[in-house]
Length: 386
Image (cartoon, rainbow, N blue to C red):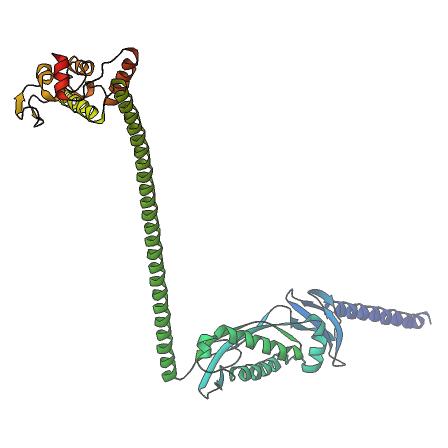
């Protein structure tokens, strides 16, 4: 009885131990295989394999415990490129359309989009994981509609403006499907060969026209520069001429003033001389003539004598005796004649006393000594001298 009674007890123990072991293994299995991870460049939505539903919670990068029957559906956090070209790895083939005038146009371009974190649940609910195909379809329609609105020449002269227009239109269309367009690049533009050759020739001619305009402007600038230089040189010449003329004018004014002063002084001296010796006008002229002859430093002098005296020409050395015996000197007072005869002859013009100074000195002497009046005729002067 005891042996039989122990068997159920051992069975219960074994069953309990098996349950515990199974539970432990199940827990370990669920714990080990219930983890999922997201990279730093991804967002994630949880997907339940049993219920076929997505959670609305958005997960960031890292390792998360999600359970055995759930896993993350990743969405890109970085920029994603969609390219229409013949290049390897391109998203789709180039876009084919026509220009506004009907020319065939093959366009290669690429653009970069980025998903908005807050709209990822809506994007997933509407398009699931095939959202990029929707982006490609929407982008194709948007770009073709924009490209068909331009003429062929605009693709060469307004390429940057066309790219900006395409970016704006594409961003507006893709924002409806929860994508933000960051940048767009036009890779290549292919038109018919004949048209491209004509466009190249047109562009070359336009460049030549611009080059000619630049050369014309440069020539005009050089001409204006030369004109400015000539005008400046003319102004300088005019200023120098005016300065020279004014300088000459003031020099002449100064010389005229000096001459007037000198002539005034000479006139005053002549008046004093005439008054001192009681000269008449004719006697003063004769006195000045004799004085000029005496001051002349030549060795031979030719004198013309009045016809009333003895008409003759005298050629001799200039001496005081010949002057005293000449008939023309008879009408001059003795004191004046004596003054002329006793003055020594100077050897150079620098030693000759100025006439004005002489006359002033004579006038001062005449005031201190009495001077006999001269006779009014040569005969009376000769009689008084005898």
